[in-house]
Image (tube, rainbow, N blue to C red; front, side, top):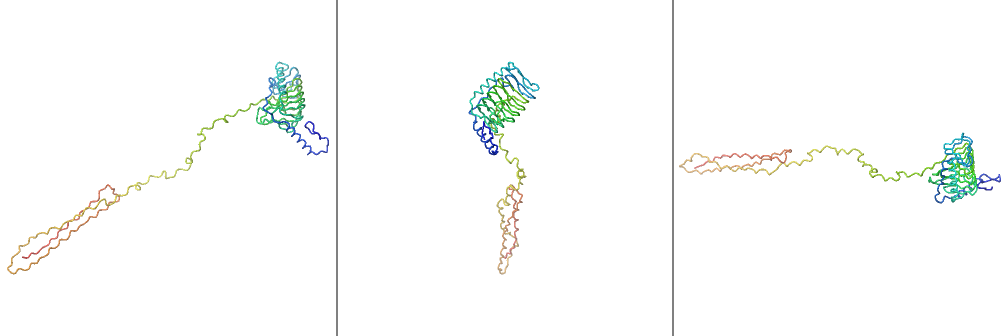
Length: 385
């Protein structure tokens, strides 16, 4: 097996397919390794007035089938444009006029700028087959063949620029696919070709081709870019070409730099008591009965009992009896009757009437009734002369 220009060619039919797959994998890895990341930012190539053209030829522009050009179409210094209709041009057509001539002049400037960029990496004659590369300037000293899928990774930068410098011819295989990811844009992809470019059938292509000579776009291709030939012809066959627009890098959303919300907008929720169960019934209970807080009742005895009234003994009454008679006889011994002792006065202490329990301390104490005066006892004393 010989590896020629990055492709595997079988010289013996008895090699196993696993071995072939291994060789292809090693080849792709080598190609990716030879294409390092871009060193520093690369400026986009300015196209000037040529930027509005989807197709610009130097000698002629021809078309077969229902090709559609979304953009301007022009030729200069040649004058021939054929195949429109049935082809469709959504922009303006310029045939050897001042606009076409100015576009050719700007194309020449852009071509020279792209060719003069310092390469950040080199690529072999073949590129694709699942390879992924990042922004930069890649140089192929001779021809460049793009086959399978080639992925251009913008790494999140919408201004990422990809420039491919091809020494001679650029060829894309049939059904090849150039894929843009992570912000990469077709308006920033440029293919500077030292001679001519040929895009295989049903290719999906991204970027603008700036060819020194001619460009041939074969049947059924879809191009998000431009086909710009300085000196030769541009040939189309039932293709679709769309001039790409560049999306500006998004500006940060105001919400990203807005100040933090005022604390009131982020304050914690009200205390659970505002949403909790109703307050305990004790907070709405009736006022306790006053008797529970009234002062203790006054004692039933508010003062010493009144002094007892003691009635002294009444003086012995004097009873006037009959005058004593004189006797001539012997005087009998007189009999002295002891006076009946006056009974001692009975002192009666009045019991105070109990004060009702409902009586307030301000009420007067119960009156004390004095005991009745004892009736004196009359005694008769017999007097003998």
